[in-house]
Amino acid sequence: MFWMMSICLGAAGFGLGGQMVSACTLLIKAVNNYKNVKTRARRFIMCSNLPLASGLFISCLVYLITWRATGQGKHMATSWRVVFGISAIFPFVTLISSLIMKFIFKDYEGENSYWIPLRITTRYYGKRLIATCITWFIYGFVYFPSVPYLGVVTQAAFQTLTFDATAQWALLIASFSIPGVFLGFNLIKNTLSQRSIILFGFAAYFVIGLILGCGYTVILSKVFPLFLVLYGLFKSLGNVGPGNLTILYSCELFADCVRGLFFSFSAASGTVGAIVGFNVYEPIINNIGIRWFYIISALISIIGFVLSFFFLPKLPEQDIDNKNSMLDDYIKSTQNNENNNPFESSSNNE
Picture 1: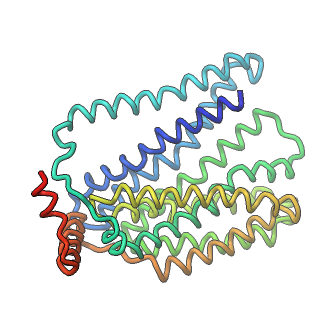
Picture 2 (picture 1 turned 180 degrees about the vertical axis):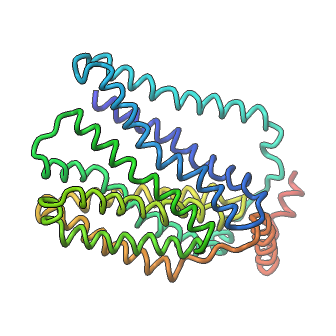
Picture 3 (picture 1 turned 60 degrees about the horizontal axis):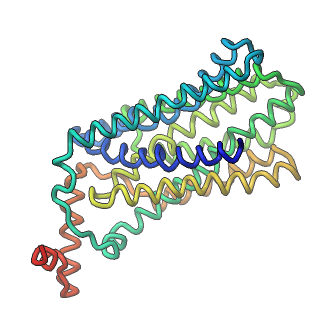
């Protein structure tokens, strides 16, 4: 059964995970109608990171409602079938939507397609790609391992927890990420630039991580509600900066022809960061205690702050159509300097 669940999770990641890249690249084209960079960013965040941040909350809510409706464990066979059945609705809707989009926009597919010299393009976007990959990696390293390890914390605080109480805590924990999306939305609207908000998110990780790590024993044993508040800030402020804007940066910084490819590299770096984080934190927690999880997360966050400060560029004011023309001009000038013009040769072949 566990092997089959692993296979199904892999298939879902291969399918629905790939949808994220195509959805975000289409979304950035849609919001490009807004010429103001902050307006584009706000619209993009509400249609990209908000659904992602809400996903865990919705899944926990579905589980809790199903658990209660089926007698809190009295009808487990019914419970897991209902949960899996509800979970199957979303991939089915995605499949149908993709097919509809394919038939509606079938004339668009392949339009204005041409060969992209990846060597020249990677040289042009190399620093930006490294910056987005580093930001995604550190965000994944710090943010995602914190979810399962909270179970260790609640177990230490309450000693014994029922399934129902565990589901309630999971629902509460999942809700912590959502307010950060709206706070980041308002910060972009009113005051800070996108780059400053990412720096603010990493700085908040550093401060709250140190407080949680250094005062872990006292806070957990004597003032557990304060621990939950601090942990909620830890999760929520992560979405204010890196959670909201890593996706935006990976779309805004690149031209149409390579956006999907470079976005995939950046997102894959976040997944690698999460996997590395799980494997790094596990022996640390087992040997020297979970308080070091927060201390190390704080130290990694300050590294993310420094690297983002030096390598992450400010988002330009112009829309993405200008990026397309700038890349095209760079490719043509570089090929002319190398006395090699594959655009002409490819057109002659056609």
